Length: 356
Image 1 (spheres, rainbow, N blue to C red):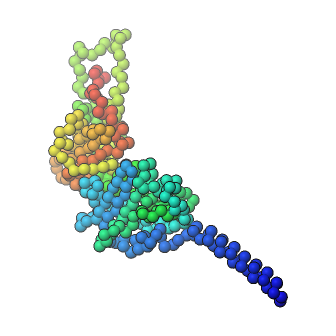
Image 2: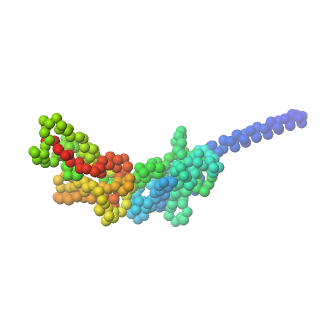
Image 3: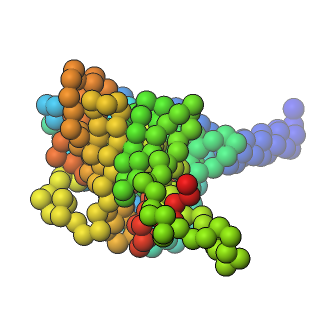
């Protein structure tokens, strides 16, 4: 083999090696990294039994839960008991996250992935996980937009510009974009007594009773005969629908059904003295009742629950629920508050001239 032919072979071989190297370099960042989302997460599964605090925040809200001798509590909710399953769900989600693609390492492009921090758009979330015996968090992550196919999200370590697309999910407990998702951290429901388990509801001088699965309002005593409008008069008005009465039937019997508060705080003496407070007495049976007090604070609606006058043998379900109420008042979820708003309107639910 002459020298020129050997040279051509060597040149071709070098060219092939260079092409392979370039292809590997291009493919390398997109390969799945099975070690987790970063060095800080590599030992999270090992440290999981020692995790004693977890904190999430975005530009609007934050929540922090800590584990103590009596279990998990939400310190950002006055120490209200936390739902351990939600905490475990978030931790399991973090452990299972896997890198699938290297994304931008330019800080000025973090906003495209929802990974800017601090974030004026309130799109990103910061998650910190702490463990016993360690002064620094086990994980300190910025979590951005979710992605599809395969399902995942964008993540970067706090303090690092490199971003990643990861496969996995943190579950509802890892999303604090809405009050509903934050309420999933709270132990509950704090009451779960369905309308079918009730016999009577008293409110605003009226009584509602259940018969054959339907709730009806018991009419008050008839007015004096002389005060009745003449049915023969052409000017007699047909009684108009009363929004407050309709709201009563559609809301009050269901007040204790699967009630999961949006927020909670310690009860204060002032809570019993709130102006324009509504009082609702919910009768489970002739011997057991619940005293519910509702009031507005700005755009929010709060409720205090307590056992009413009870006689006879204890009601096991009421006793279990009441143990969660002592010393607390609860913020209504916004969707429930919306249905209850008509009850706060001025004017009585009593009709001016009740039908006979």
